[in-house]
Image 1 (cartoon, rainbow, N blue to C red):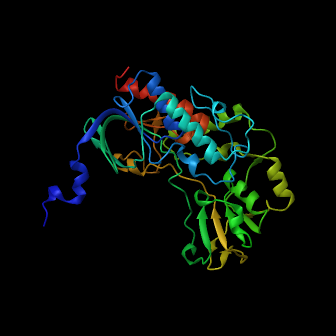
Image 2: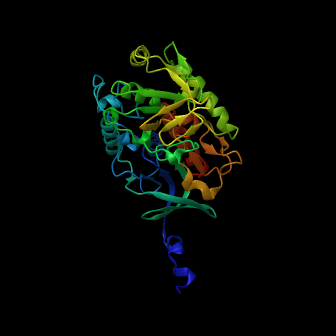
Image 3: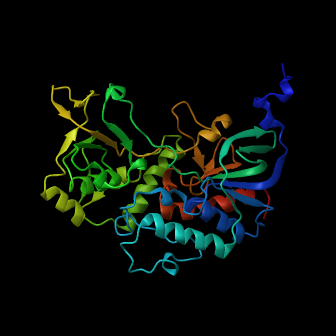
Length: 372
């Protein structure tokens, strides 16, 4: 029998850790913004800070989006600090695939500012080690004084647990796995969800086959355009939640969904006839409490994502209700452990919010660690 010091479970803890001041986890919008601002503060890339990214190439979660998502259908791609999006993708290319255009922009951004991105590397766990944080990855281990977590939500899709789900003989998938509407031709598809992704899927799929649209709550549409003031008000509501340790909701749940020509066309052909949430899933479809049934070949869960924070679990940052109490100028700093900032979380879970949060987190953490 091997001695306890040489068992596989202890091998990771025996690895020598690379010491560095700040580790940024994730190279999406929030992570790149944080790295840029650390650089602007005078911190040395590779010596004072490093960015760990699990993807093989630049682009964050954008590179995994479905092919039909174009620049004309996304909410908006906000410029990263110091370099405009149109420097890489001309303003008129509205039909360019988001999964290509945005990664191209991120790649050019990383190259221009020579950001210290280390990829592909997956962070497995972050543990407290006295005055430092030990960051275990599938490659090296790092010993950091501070951490900016920018892992977003893409790696943590949310699928509700409904009775009978395991009995369904058709196909179930999440928005994360959606590619094209054409793959569902000739099948009846139930789309679950009331967010922007759900409506985009519904619009596309209803053009090629029959659909049912199911939501837990009555969707909130808005007749007026979405303004910057609306955005600030929505962010303020979500920020108040995280400052009080509540689980943040999505910004769209606060702002509502603006009517677009595509949505009006979908409504005109009857695709937006919303049904309440079913009570159970059967082998052949779904069932409602009043006895109504709907046969289906596919259930598409467009039910959003949760923050991908499982690697931080050993730090016990969450309260009993599952939320994390946040503080700092833009609510990026974890109150329980000021060495840790979460960007792309709560009020900064949008492209423009991620930019501002990256700047705040970089300065606050560098100041806290006495690096300025």
